Length: 63
Image (cartoon, rainbow, N blue to C red):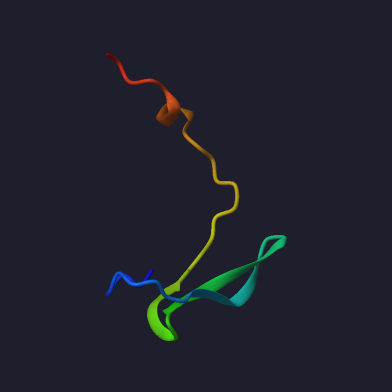
């Protein structure tokens, strides 16, 4: 759906600028087009693969 008009439309996401990140090739650029017009461009500066996670964020809050 075209967010500007609310009408149905062609929505396409193209990933590019693949670079090695550890054992993986990861895209560092993503371009979104709607009905052939560029809607958004996103650039990833870095990835962190399997970072440590503070497990307390999953604890149930006190009542």
